[in-house]
Image 1: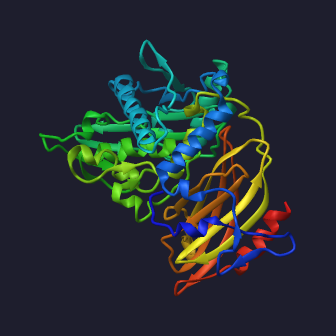
Image 2: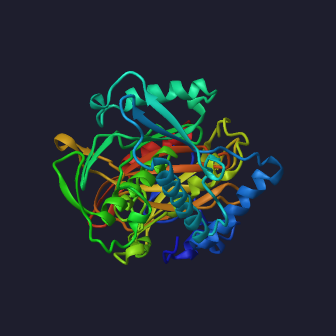
Image 3: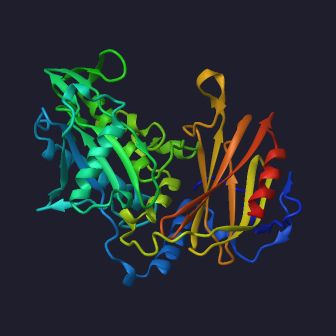
Length: 435
């Protein structure tokens, strides 16, 4: 990432034994062999990571990877919405272009979301709800719809346990400019092998609707509350943006929040980016962008990587060293790992607790900033976490492996008046190193 760091500190390596976690207020002072100054910026990291991925992947192992399965579901007593195939071909092509453009901007070259196509058009697996009429479906019907979709795919020889599936539900009604939506709308339970997400189809939904609207059309839209006014452009930004956001969850991407430096580009897609998608087309703002942490996870996902090489193999990650320190207004997270499947990058999600339902404090991850590191030839990493704030925090330290797998470890700390307390993290580090 393009934050200004005090890079002289990155030449230092921590030491840590199983008996006592080395958590300190200053950075340990042992010289490191790897020249960390060569990976100061996000573009430098991308170049290094891409080389590591290509070295492991090797061209001869490319087998096409996987394709996203897009399903169009509608009740037995209703037909698909008007022009649904044409509109969703346009929507998914634009989503594919967004990812392609963002991966290139971040230095990863031509990396493309794999889509199933027939005769050059998006392939939609049509599933007709066989048990229930239109009026019986609601936002909470996900499990019911999921079961019908899985059965229909199984009949085609498609194993849903090894697929990433986007279910587009024809569960809305349009009366002129009045739109009622009653579809499941979320992503769930995903990793690099399996993922599922729901989105909704509406007659007014299209890529053209994201562009400036000379007619100044105002829709009245009802989803979870009463009817609300939406311009046509805001409607399409919200619901096309919602589709790509939920697809992100279906591909294992969690929420994250733009760092102060990243926010200069706009809104993180996996933050509130579903509400800003393509706003730049209308000159209404900077729109949505992909954070480096999200790009790293997509880079090795079989939907993007072009290979399923060892995708089912466990990484068998083990931490040899792990150190947490505070200096120069940043948290320094450093360590050494070993694994059966090489890790190509490390990500730290720094997530502050927020009030949840009934007043309980929880880590909701919407405000989790992300910080990345390469792995040196000795499998060492160096992460600097900035934008620090007072409060209780969870750090989710995640290893990104070449086959698409990830492994997450958690540490907790509190901060008051700019001074961190690593007491709890110290105990957690001991546990991480002993496992």
